[in-house]
Length: 195
Image (tube, rainbow, N blue to C red):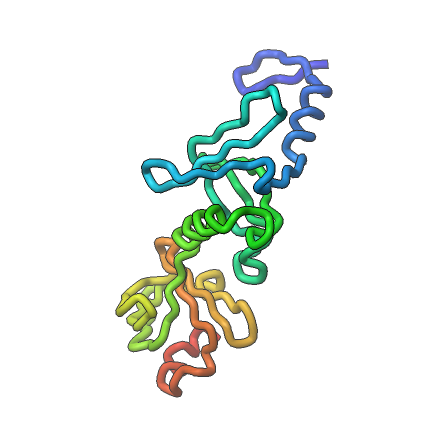
């Protein structure tokens, strides 16, 4: 039994190959100080070597991405190590970076995650004005004064708890308000569109 691919040629369906590829995709590989060697590259990124066996060459990645599986609720557990392509593939998981890697590796991985998850805290709201489906914000943050624009839709301002907000601007930059109840009455009035 065959099927047509996009060029129109017949190809045989290989069930064994598909099962092997599916098993590879679903396989969970845990990384730790016994099987993984992380190193800083000349460009400031992180490379990875994974031990396969005593006689085999290690699996090598020139550069990897470090991604939190649960960035807000469990920032030190289930850290996904991924390839760097746009549609990246998971190489493995570190169950807990406080226990499963050395202090030096933990510092290196946290540095990468801090770059990825850079989220200034909004300390004061000067102005929020709405125009043509966009909201223009002028704020003070822990990193200094900032102006940014967000879409006026529900996905731009997300409640992380009863009082904590995450704001994502048009460029994908994230800002946090840890407790909006601590803002002044005037600031809350400006923020009212999103509460």
